[in-house]
Length: 386
Image 1 (cartoon, rainbow, N blue to C red):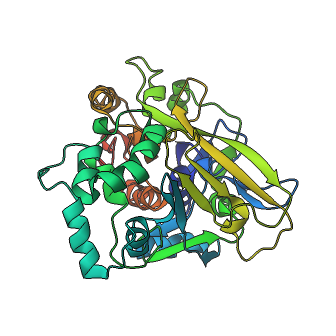
Image 2: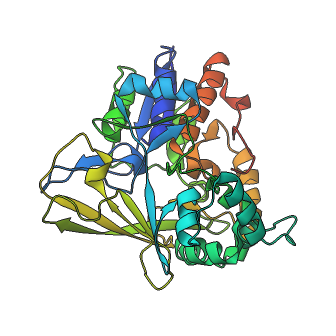
């Protein structure tokens, strides 16, 4: 008899889990999601007025160095190579991000070559900071006061809603300084956007006779008793009805505008780094499908705020107080029977799409190999910080 599996959440984590368990032919899978659509925050849909493919919850550019994940996801949709180039509006002008050789020469009004620029930026950095303990110290050590205050301080305060000294130094590792004219926002071997949007990719993942899908269906823990195992990708604290308190998340919201012309800002994403500008960035969605042609354009002003009870959680803050609370919730989770917590929300970690897919592939493989022996199966695949 096939074992019954419940998967909570129809984003990439849940969809990959569902697909991989279904194809073994040993499991019947039900995927539930409280939203009225699949694909989670990667959801894409055509704008009704312009027919532009809209990244409804903000831009998503698939990028990875993991060839296994890259090949896997292309089984479910055609990805067109795409390079994300981000600009930053600062008090001193508009520059390219990540900080690169062009940014350095324009910002400091110099004409340095790579080795000269590396030496110059080293001199800008605060050499007295040997072991940076937070975001601000890491930035000051790497690039000095001028770059930090123009490119990162105000933006970080808006994005995370706290003093940069409260954030871990590791956040800045994702956006290094480059000593070349490479303005590709990502440093990944494989980069692309699905030609038919992310929703179509997730739909193809879920298209299997052993998978049933229920949307507009809110999960409750009472459902667990009807299944042999549950894979839960919702917020970890929500699973326990916030009984110990709420983990800290940032959420984002948008002001969507129509531009009656072919191009509003000339670039897909422009960051606004000054704290006096209330939004963090503006993204113009037609630039995410340069293979299409549209006479009008739509753009979104993006704002960041604390996540309230009715908001969609986006980014785990993981401040020290959050980590203390997280440990307590993990201890509760260890006591749950036949439940595995997956994905960004279920594990309370910062994870990109490729991380989520890779982890779902590994978890599903382990579970299938153990023939669904639920009682002893892991609660969390990885407890390390991300």
